[in-house]
Length: 197
Image (cartoon, rainbow, N blue to C red; front, side):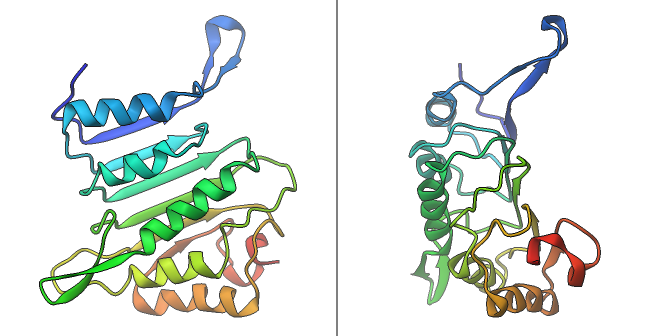
């Protein structure tokens, strides 16, 4: 199958009513199949939502194949520790810059405007990729060359105590609002947000 006009894509787990509400999870090879679809289609994807995917190294390849991506949302209803290195690699990739036309520009998805990371499971596992490097990556995407869209919204839903942000990291993230970043966190009251307990 080829979908050259594809602009928006959601890969998701679903609940099948006909099977008594049974949850049908994303297949383990779903990201590999998505990578192949993007390679064949040569489409200009602008929105990508990955809901409860089984993460593997195909995520990095997918990000390389969607340079015009403006919105990336990744949601997890079940977190697996093996996902941490994959997500840390994504944070690193989203931080990388190169010199283009005399100014630094992000190598991966340079026009990313909305980033969402939502960990909606109720386990108490900590995730190591929500750390100072994550905050630095978000901050770097606010300072784009003139005429290049910049990150305008960060959606971050995680349980309390599941991140590796110290007080300085939390303050740095909150200070990005001054630079025009809209923060969509677990609650409306940022000072009492459970993300930062």
